[in-house]
Image (tube, rainbow, N blue to C red; front, side, top):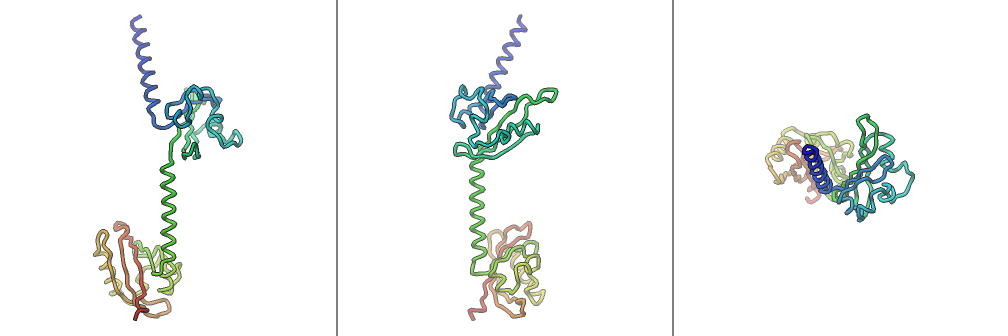
Length: 248
């Protein structure tokens, strides 16, 4: 029975290795049967639910995890069983934001006899997204309420312009977007002069240019331009426009 004993030892080692690996996974993992009862779960699952495995094994998924109520068909496990495909959803759980992924476990014949549920804590990611949205909202507010003209140029065309820029030039935002700044100058020489100065600035350098632009109504306006590169590879710059003719 030597070979038999060796095989048993190999199985025991493999089982212990699998258990160690399963418990070492930092994300909560649940193995469910066809009736959506918990068959196995790892230590991360215990930590997430703040409960011991003994109180989880054999329980229905909806009983121990879903606190939102709603019809059974809203359960991601039920959705997976109906579609036969991996399903995902994002929800709040124990003051954390988690992405729940439910994957089918199929037999060699293709019949689904269970599922694997993976909980991924995306709280930090979602908080970062919210902070980014908040900052973008603040920047947009500053952009539109600034007392000076602000524009973004990409590929030598306007892609953004605030209300003050429209007031200085006499053009509406729709009339500026997609057009080249050349429209504000009477000759190519002045436009090229400004372009050369702007492209001579590198890194975080700010190019400062004094020039004269022609409004839509034909009136000349003296302005001070400050250019800063956003992305040199895409030829994208942001610049501010200050009407200095009022100071004369």
